[in-house]
Every structure is written in C-alpha cells, then in structure tokens.
Length: 427
Image (cartoon, rainbow, N blue to C red):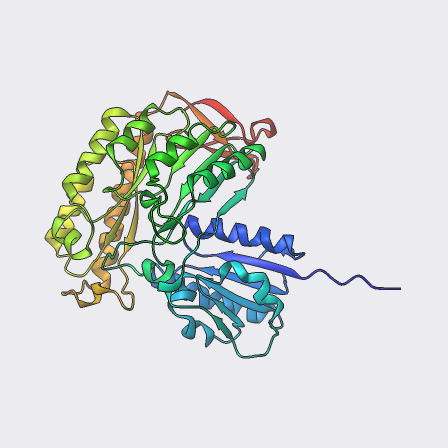
C-alpha cells in the first residue's frame, strides 16, 4: 500500500512595514497553493522564512536573534531570509550560522522553486542581483480576519534621501496598473473585505509601470478616483504619502469621498529646513504646514499621523527645538518617532557633527511624550460624537477592537455579530 507523502510545513515571520506584511501574506498563500502546510512561527516547521526590514539597526539584530532561536528549536529545518536586509547585505546574512538561502528583491516571489532545490547542510545559497536590474511588480495583499487588507500598489523609490537605504533594497519606483488594482479590489470585496489600506514605498509616486516608466500618464489621483467606484468595499485608507506628492486635489477628493477615510499619514522627518536640506527631502516645512492646514480646513475631524527622525547628523539643540516647536504648533494627531541610526552606503555618514546616542534617545522620548499628548487631545475633541467603527473579529479576553473612520481606537465587549461590521458608535 502506498503511503501518502507527508505535507511539508512552512512558517513565516515579518519584520518592518505594512508592505512587508502584505508580501509575506501573499508568499504564504502561494506556498499553501503549492501544497505546504502553514505553521505558526513558534511551532516546529520544515521551512522558516524571515521577511526582513533594514530601516534600523534593530531589524538586523532581530533577524539574527530569530535565526538563533530556530537553530535551537529546529536545527534540521531550512532557514530562508528575504526582504530588504537580504538585498542589502546578502553575504553578511549568508554567514549567519543556520541560514540556508538568501533571496534578494528579484527572487522573493520564486520562493517555491528555490526551496525545492535546497537541502540542509550545504553552504548558504545566495540568489540575488544588482538592484538596478530589479524590475517587475508583484501584486500583494494581506488578509487577516477579512476586516482590513493592506494592498501593495507601488514598490521602490526614485528619491535619494541621505539617511535611507530603501532605494538600494527595493529598486526603482514601479507600480501596478489601475485596471489591476481595481480588479483586485473587486476580488477582495467578493471575499467580504470591508477596508483596504493602500500601501507602497513611495505611494504618491504611483503610476510608473513594472519597468519604472509612466503607464498612459496614470497617477495616484486617477487611482483613488477609480477605486472610489468599486462596489462592496466600504472603506479605503491611504498609508504614508510624501507631502510634496499629496496634492490639493487628492486632499479635496478625500474630503468629499464617502469611502476614503479622513486619515492621512504624512512623513515630515524634521521641522527644521536646514535639516530637511541635509536629509535631501523634497519640500520645506512651509509646504508641510500648508498641507496640514488644508486638510484641517476641509476635514476638521481628520486624523493626521507624522513620521519624524530625531538625532540626524547636524541636528543641534536649536534645530531639534525647531522640530519640537513646529510639531507642537501643528494640528496633528500622533507621531511615529524614529531614532536615527547609521546605515552603510548612505550620504548621511558624511555629515557632521554626529549626535551622541544618549541625546538621540532623550529627543525620541520628548517627541513620544508630545505624540501621546496630541493623541489624547485629538480623542478628547471627538468625545460624545457618534462615528462609524469597523470592528475586528478577535476576541481578546471578552473584548473586541475597532477603529473609527478617523482612526480612533475603540474597545467594546465582544459581540460576534459585530465582527467585520461597521457600527455607529458614541465615542
């Protein structure tokens, strides 16, 4: 009697951004379609895949720790590293004991083929190419609980900010076509998805096709107008969008739309024009203030998130005070605060003076406190209002969570009938 061959198992772990999560989710579905059984990363699996980030030193460290953990837990299992860190430092990763395969940006979506050719015990195999040669666009989305989906519509970046390794890790700016994105949104609507979060590395630069050239002059404004017409999707959110690409027409469109939520995330990085210049950002703080003012004029209830970096080389106490005072004066809702960390092959390494690490941490703490106060104030402004909340299906100790249209987190006693439903809620 023939014994059925045991299904191989695979486990994934994601470090970094929402884009990485959408790609991991897509890789996971691909591997399940190829006959693999998906396991939790804490369980024993035949293959472990770590999708890495390399925005901070911490992500690199975390990758190493995860490999060590797998080595202790399942020394016979295959370990595959992909993502930004894998593209930037393939040789360094291949030398980590226990790593079997390093997949660069161009090979990530050929995971199944690479695994089939791999056996434990050989020296680590690197499959990568120069980032200049990376082209093509792989559609990805993450589905967790069907409530909210992160959909990748753009990848790569043509900017050259002096602190950033992303263009070296992700390649040139390229995108899906509007027709494809709309078709995918319709597919997700048919699966019961209520909310799509549009993600990309430089989302506002949408419209450059898989080879990095403009498709029929398509742009991000065209995309959101077409998505607004898709039946079945109740909500869209725009993830991080550069201030110079967040045009007035986009803001005005969101203000009128019933489907695009009153919520923007706009990277600032510094409130000092001098530091913005050293960072090689493509705007000045005055433009940023104009964008915030227009959003608040048209949508006083809108939630605005901000990315900011502290401790960039050359950031004196006075320049940091400029940033603090600028953020204090803006009508924003919360901040993601990053402590600057040195990245190899970036222009920022040539800028002096270097800010001591303890000063960087103090500045981070100071802005995180300001962020907390901003969020408290923003939430308080909406107390007593009735707003629509999309509840998620997780039962956390008898409680469930959801977000209002303008991104205030709501907790309520768990009710099964509210899962993946939009409910009117008094804040």
